[in-house]
Image (cartoon, rainbow, N blue to C red):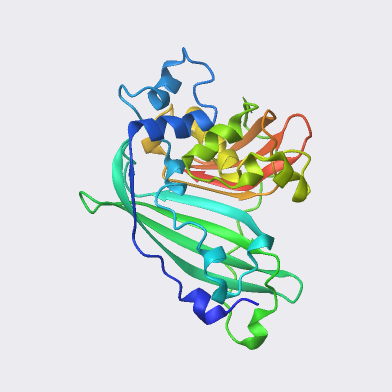
Length: 288
């Protein structure tokens, strides 16, 4: 069972991550950016000339690794962990090449009750090593399916505010993005080497007919759509993006991004699969 005090006190060491324009291009390609190689807007993310970086790349930079699996004394059942939500808040423009320092810490652990799991919030602060400038705040929300009921031994935080509900009207804009059949093979090279996304045998043991796409890749595709539709392909205009990862995607499926303009600078969105009509991202909010 999860040890609340030890887990709540967890802080990572500084993670120093140097990346190049090649890494930035590879991240974009893993999201399907550049599907039209003659589109000058997409070339800004896939060609080193005047290169731009998508804000959601901050989710994969300077991450602390599989600390929950390595720190067995914390009592987290790593095999029952599910990535539930992701958010990125930008404080400065992400350089296309730089050395960033990541500092991660647990900021909230919520007990859902015996047999109902727990919710763990991990916050990562990214700063530029050269300038000391705060680049982004990244939050990962994890659902610990095997760790409910820990609070009977003491500890536990209040639940975070609920994510805004989805609009009940028809979307103002719908965009479609076809994912590549080899999308997971490309995306994993940006840092997440979990064999669930490449090894058919591992996927079968997890209950999937074939390897699934990374949830953060689906999230990144949504970011591409928001930047395309509402920022005129200028990633510096996107200040934050958050969504719940609600269902897996198989590489090769088509993402239908449904968007609502809630206010002048706030966009609600969700993503569903064109082939299976399954919602894979929900409760999405982006601020411009």
